[in-house]
Structures are given as C-alpha cells and as structure tokens.
Image (cartoon, rainbow, N blue to C red; front, side):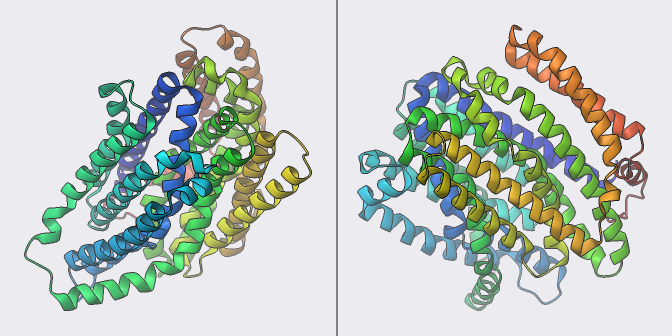
Length: 494
C-alpha cells in the first residue's frame, strides 16, 4: 500500500476508535443520567471546545507546523524550544481564562450553561479546559515530529477509551464528579507524554524566545476562524439552554454529535494530504489541481450518499444509540443534520485551500457559517416561527451548509474545478438506487433487534452498493485512487 494511504488508514482507524468511544460514552450517560445529565455533559464539553482555540492561541496547527519546519530547515531551532514556548503561551492563556471563570462563577454559568443556577459545572469545566489544552499541546508536539503512532495512541487512550471507562468504573456518579475524573485522567496522560522531551537537556532561553516569536506570528491570526468554527457547534446547546428545556437540548446535542462523528471520520483526509499538497504545489501546480479535482468529486459523492442516509435513518440512529429516552428526538435530529452533506465537502476540501494559500479561505467560510447560524436563529426565534429547538436546529443546519457551499466555491475558483468533473449523473443514479433499497429496508429495521447492529449492517451494505458502483463506473477519483495504490513508495505526492 502507498505510504500516504497507509498513514491515512492508520489515522482513520484512530479517529473511528475515538468516535466509537464518544458514542459509547454518550450512550452510557443517556442511560445512567437521563436527558438532564446528558445535556449537562454536552454543555460542559461544548463550552470547553468553544474556548480551546482561545487558550491554545492558534497553536493546534501552529505547533506541529513550526516543529515540522524546524526538522526540515538547517539552522532552525530544535523541537524542544517550540514545545517549551508553546507550553508557556498556553499556560498564560489558560490561567487567565480559568481565573476569570472561577472569580465569577454565576456569570460563567449564565453565559455558558444557560443560567446562574448551574455554578456547580464551572469547576469541572475549568478542569477539563486545562486538560484539553495539555492534550492539544502533546498531540501537536508528536504530530510535528511525524510520530503518527504516538499521536494516534494518545488520542485513542485520552479521548476514546478513558471517558467511557470512567463511567463504568465509577457508576452512579454525578456529572460534576465524572467530568473532574475525566479531566484528571486526561491531564495526567497528556503531561506525562511530553514532560520527558520538555525537560530533557534543557532548552536555551534564546531558543525558546525565538520559538515563541515564531509561534505567536503564526497562531493568533488563525484564532478568529478557529473560534467561529468551534462556536458554530458549541453555541447550539448553549443557545438552546437559554430558550428551551434540557430535554430539547439533549435532542439537539445528539444531532450535533452525529455531525461531529462525520467530522471525526473525514478529518484524516486533511491531516495526511495537507503537507503533501503544499510541497507539490511549489513545483507542479497542474498535478495538485488534478488531485483536488478528483478529491472534489469524492466529496460531492460522499455528500449525495450522506444526504440520503441521514434523511432516512437519522432518527432511528439516535434511538438505537441513546435508547428510549430519545424516541421523540427524530424531527429535531433530522433538521439538525440536514446540512451535514455539504459540511462533509467542507471537511474533505478545507485542507487543500490551507495547503496552497497563505490567505485563510477557511476562516471566511467559518465566519460566514457562524453569521448564517446567528442570523437564522435570531430571526426565527424572535418571530417565533417554530418551537425554539426547531429554530436552533434550522440555524445550525444552515450554518454548516454555508460552510460547505463557500468551500466548494473557493475550490472551484482556486483550482479550476468544474461541475462536469463530478460525474453527477452516475452518483445521482446510484443515489436513487440506494434510496429505494433503504426505503424498502426501513420497515424491517424498525422492528429488528438489536436495532443498532441491524442499522449498521444495512448502512454498510448500502455504502458497498453506492461506492462499489462508483468504483465500477471508474469515476475520476476511483481511477486516480487505483493509480495511487500502484505508485512507487518513494513518491508520497503521487
């Protein structure tokens, strides 16, 4: 197998493991704590996600980039000063954010958790924020070192295995205790992973200062776009908590988690291809344009399949995953995930733009998506066009759809992709086929037991029919993938 495909496969398996652990965690929470406990955890987790770009100051991408460049550039500082500098920058940002949250817990709870009565969540929120900052620091360090196995192990253990394991080990605990335990375990794991390289040999003050300057020059300018992307997801339960019941917050959170799982599966594409495309762009732009054209076709084909499956099975999937407490979640979830197919295009293609341009196209897409979310939410809620949960669901779906549409526009303009490159006739014909098969199978799935297993089996079968048909039709991305599998191992950009 080609090295690029091998790296992508390993990262994909790690992401799927994390996704499975997250699904298991939320399932356990729904059964152990009900909709209130599920919603409380979702609020804390989303609040942490919202502030991570701020407390890491853009270093989620900046740290691995600077370390990778240092390894490839003669005379550049070694990796250790970047790790020490990033730790210092993050420590200051985390201390300021945590201090403000703890000094005014009622205000923090009112802003993040829907009311000043939720002050008990503030302490666990701060602890998890610190732990997640440490995790991103450790993950970024090893990603920059190109130690993919350690990156994947850290991610799977810290985010996929530890949280559901703690729910099982300390059953009956309230959400506050559980979040504190998760934060403690994740923090110990992350700090333990980087303490040795951080202190080994000692870093010179001048080298640390130079590394900090490089990190500060790169990271902060990415923060607005990163915050906008995170806010689009994190504000859904926060806004819902201010306008509707915790039960409806839980329904919305479940829909958002389905979209987030899509992100987990598709992220490896960008993680693996970004550095390869960036290097190739410098000397062979025509080749990159062809590769991105093929990738755009794959993105659109994934979107067609996702739209059909989410329309047919999103409500059933939530019921099978989270249990009978979510039997009434179908309508809210279906609307929440309606924009997910276009969001899949954003996830697959966003790194192509980062690879070839200094200009932050993705920041424009993220800010536009957040603006669309805010506009639709403000209008629909103020005019009471529907139940508040439905209004928030439509706002979120609109926001992620705008992200996908703008990304496709930027890709078309940057790489010269044309609509005729998508093989839409073939994809739509196969889409109609799998939709008919899905409709025929749905009544059987509803009464099947175990529901989750049968639903998963049907999804795999429909995916095999759809993508197998595209492969047999030799659409452009299938032809390119077949060639890449045969490429020489010493040509990662092939």
